[in-house]
Length: 363
Figure 1 (cartoon, rainbow, N blue to C red):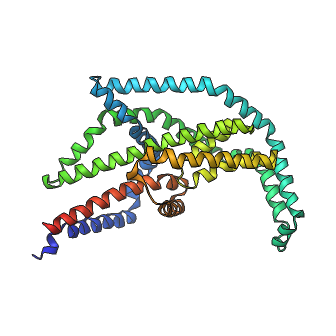
Figure 2 (figure 1 turned 90 degrees about the vertical axis):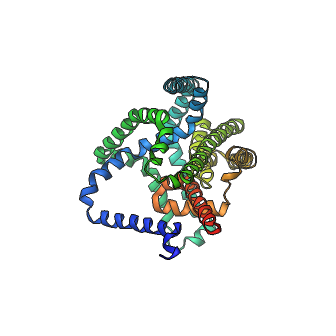
């Protein structure tokens, strides 16, 4: 038998072809896989969020276990600490957030009216009129759309009651199931790779162990670093907005913190509500918001990201842009969020395959 048929590359190609064949056959008998698809859709987000929390918290559980604390007790202690932190945050930030939400709801009609007036005022701008000669009514249409958005929101809810009920039900199911899924992930997750080893030949166990170990460390470093960076950005943006006197600083800072999970484009999206609120105040406030966000992003990119993420996860900006654009086109917002961790996993797998092929060629 020629050597090429005994090479790992040839065997890997056969496995890939078999996988594609299974997918092709599966698309032709969808009625058989429909229960599986429903199960995946139901459990995808709870498992995804539980997995995120697993990579964030398992070092603490491992540390407590090393201190002779039973693993189940370590997990319960972690849950108690988490509930205590949530209660502390609610007691501290809850009243502030409540006041800002009430104020925002009261001011929302005025804000929408001011936005409409600002958009309509563009019609008197000579440059804008020159650009919009063919569609002079476009600005007024956009303004009417913005002001009518809030009014149509209630109608939209009433027309989609069934979908809204399903969404709320799914949310509460996730809230209930995530703690249980996370508990068993933390309790037994370190045993799962050992079960996988038993189904593979002994010759592949070392390669799989190293690959899974690198993937585990890479995803853990990314998720833990991402949480630290988001908290850092949210806290500094909040302090900056307080200093410059911007309205609704806590709500706007929380929005900037949450959107920061989107690589590259997240900070740009996070600044938009702040710019809108600042524009309704004064042009000087817009400049102040830009300065605050630019300063925070510089601190984050120069000081925090290199120290938190580590050098192994550094990816060129062009690669990040391409990944986010392609994944966003394929899977929307979720794809943009999962683009980098998926790339990290794929990169680790490819590197290990390449090293094994090189070792096979030299042997």
